[in-house]
Amino acid sequence: MGSLPHVVEDCLGFLQLFSDGSIFRSNDIEFKISAVQDHSVTFNDYLFHKRFNLSLRFYKPQSVTLNTNKLPIVIFLHGGGFCFGSRTWPHIHNCCTRLASGLQAVVLSPDYRLAPEHRLPSAVDDAVEAVRWLQRQGLRLKEDENGGDSWLGSDVDFDRVFVVGDSSGGNIAHHLAVRLGSGSSEMDPVRVRGYVLFAPFFGGEVRTKSEEGPPEHMLNLELLDR
Image 1 (tube, one colour):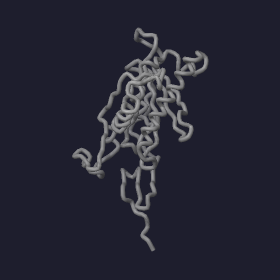
Image 2: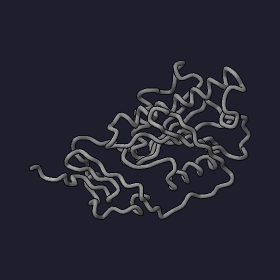
Image 3: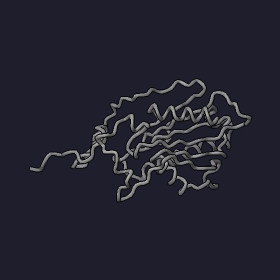
Image 4: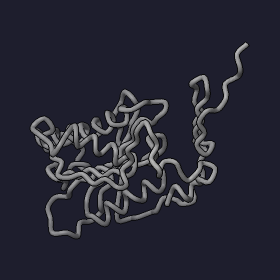
């Protein structure tokens, strides 16, 4: 008889990979912060990838203080080592709210398939699909002013799109830049004007010094949040 499956990778008990390839993922995560109720920003959730049941959150300032007719778009790709994270997590939600309010921009925060259940480049493919979803909204409004979501499309400048990625999200943003560049007629009316990578995560076959520490037993959610 073979031995019973045993844990070969364990990340804080929230994600465990077993020797037989099976995976345990816990959704019972207690966050030390809560979602901020910022009444200067409104948001809605949209299903953008029906096949994989992926949604995004679309943030929009309630009032515009800048002297402009249309708001730029920021696509925010969350971090989490490709294995964790969601648009609904409080620190990610709060970050997007602050971006929308502080930058006077609409913010689009998509979920993407997580590893190890979904191996790369699944996350990158999902980010591309989120951009194409944005393109479809722009095309509907371009062809028919009454053809799209009026709340989503009104006062939005599809010609000024910026992609922002944090950690593994920065890696995804990099690959979006490789795939999409600054946009082309293929992505019309979406035009990406810039990419911002915050502490982007790039890994290889050999671990870097920063990847070697701190030891997993010293990690905690508070440290990861910082």
